[in-house]
Amino acid sequence: MNQEKTAPMTFGQLSVIRDLDLSGPDEQSDGNLPLVLPLPPGTSKETAVAAWARLVERHEALRTVYDRRTAQPTQTVRPFEPFELGTVQLADATEEAALSAAADWAKQEIHIDCEHSWRAAVGVHEGAAMHLVCVVHHLAADSAACALLEREFATLVAGGTLHSDPPQPWELALEQHGDADQREQTMEYWLEEWQGFVDDDRQGGDTSRRVRVALYSERAMTAAHRVAERLSVSVQSVIFGASSLVLCHLKGRERATFGLLAGNRAEKRWQSLLSSMNQLAPITVEAPRESSPDAFLRALYLRSLERLLYGAYSIDELRRRLTETDHVNPDPLQFDCYFNFLGDIAEPPPAGSPALDDVEWFDDAWQGGPSFNLRASMGTGLYLSLTASDAYLGTEAVGRFLAATEAALVSLADGAPDTLAEVSLAPLRQVSLPRGPGPRTVGHE
Image 1: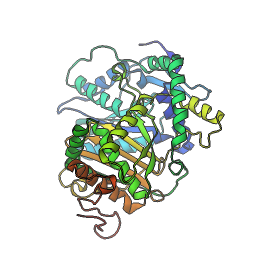
Image 2 (image 1 turned 180 degrees about the vertical axis):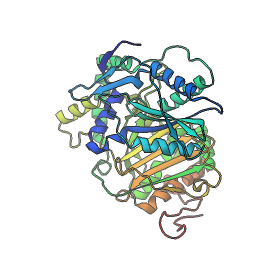
Image 3 (image 1 turned 45 degrees about the vertical axis):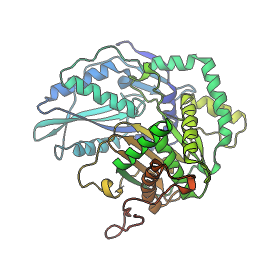
Image 4 (image 1 turned 90 degrees about the vertical axis):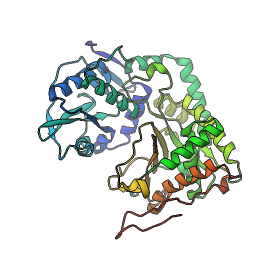
């Protein structure tokens, strides 16, 4: 564990680097992920620091630096060295206060070429240690990896032990770069698929204002499960199908291309890897209005599954091959619409939250990235979060979109619609706008 080693970047790390390359020098903090790890009552600062140190020793991604200057960027794992953590005073004992502190930290760039890919401190309120407040760079962790850190940290602060050494990013990198047959097969697949994308969803350069809105619905979650069980498809694909149907309706067309996020953790060996493994697995959704809803959802499930199987690839190699074939748009990152399934992490909002009865508007929408970015997570209920631009969707339609997706899931679960045109998209809840004195209703049934 204590020997320095250098290897190529994994395909997931390379995608993060190339995404950061699109950001300006003042926007490199875009790769920072706020992370709050709760501490059981009575946990000492020393216990919290020791638990985090064990994770840094265990996961090489937390002590890796990256060289992006060469044609083939590399990662270098540094030996583990003991460290101390400071404290940060929290406004109160809540997770929200810790997240606010982490979000402030996340605005400061982590220099990935010369410092480890995290910063952390023990969050303290009235002298008691409440949370470990962290920022982890996206090169070191995706949403699944953050969940892994939270589980392992909870085990350690409770006095438990972590058994078996996890896989490390350099091992995955050597396997990915060394399998020439798989790389070629994947390239051939994407070179063919690139011909069927919707040009209107690959424009890029949208600088109009973004707004962010969220919705939580147990009714939609129940409906999605019912549809998935009836059709023997995944719940995720049902949610994706309903949301893509709504987008096609709002845009007045029957085709839409999404940058579907592939988690690339289907293989058991890599499920405990701490790294970023997300990559775009683009897909064009075909939703003719006269199609059968059941046939549409079954086809989308199979087509999504196929693309996710090819979700790990070298973004540099694909760009080069697309350029060599004179493709009109060879940028593997230029997709205006994203769909990202975050996993089984949804928790009910606190009592009184707007997301329970209305849609909840936020003031902190990131003003870059895709024009339409939909995230879904599951639990007792379905949690949907959408960031979209005025130019692509418009403020009023952003809130309506989530409410219409909820309605579509409920309508699909009823099993009554014979065609996609008959799926009800009429909101089942109030949808307010973020501006003006009090809520302005734009849809309610």
